[in-house]
Image (cartoon, rainbow, N blue to C red; front, side, top):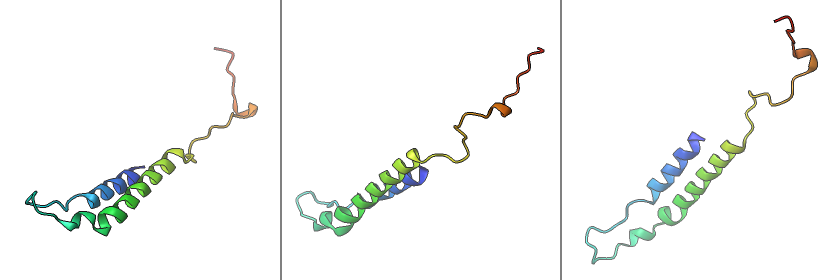
Length: 77
């Protein structure tokens, strides 16, 4: 899940920048392929990684009911 957050952060970093120093001048860098194609795909991929991380079952956790032989009752105490 941490990897997904990192991928989302990288996607937003790829989207940043491209502004003009002078607001009266047009900067076509705003519509570069990196900002309108690569960055959104990277962000969506990061969210997919996060969802997979949330939904994936942890193999180290046993959620099954224990067998009757595994349950030890101590009735003397």
